[in-house]
Image (tube, rainbow, N blue to C red; front, side, top):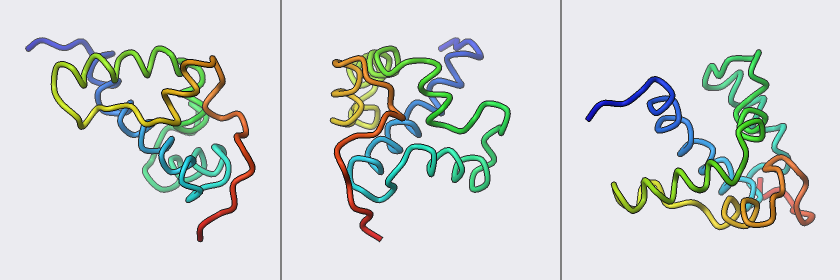
Amino acid sequence: MKLSEKDIVEMVFFPVINEACRVLDEGIAVKASDLDIASIFGMGFPPYMGGVMYWADSIGAKYIHSKLEDWTKRYGGFFKPSSYLAERAAKGIPLSAPSKQVQARL
């Protein structure tokens, strides 16, 4: 299999974005900006890109969802989009936009 640099970056980080969507949906984090800070300071995401959720919004939920759906068909359930991501992609809502009022679980 020959993958471009873009494909490699997407296959590494789109599952991270998908999991970040689950974290928001479950109330583990309250705001997308919390995950941006955590991605910069916790996993070394490049600060000039604004954090993982900010970067995801620059790409678009629809595109991320479509790629994850395609990879799910090709490679299995690891890439299955979360319901939060699927809902945001269908409605054209940015991933970082506030959702229903969620209480933090922690």
